[in-house]
Amino acid sequence: MTVLAAGEVSPGLLGFVVVAGLGFALYMLIKSMNKQMSKIQVPREHEQETDQAEPAQASARASVHASGEAARGADDKAGE
Image (tube, rainbow, N blue to C red; front, top):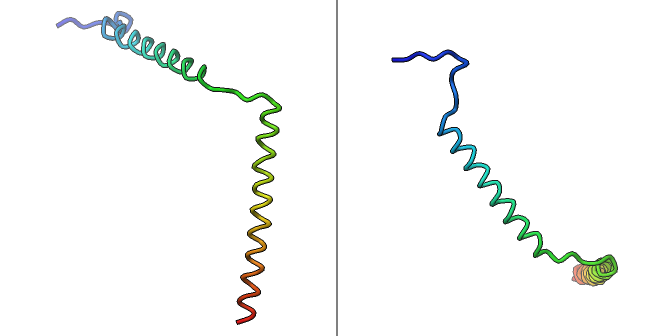
């Protein structure tokens, strides 16, 4: 049996294969991510402003509608 000194130990073929495999997996993940990112449609600024205004108007209408129903419900309970 051969005893090696601390400075004589190397990772060998297994270490190289593991590092090369990790590098290849990283390359494939980055390639896939770039493909997915290119599919994303980024809206322009004027489209964002109109998109943000529509939900705000809808939520305002919904809150007015809900508060009207709540007031009617309170009136119905008071009349009972």
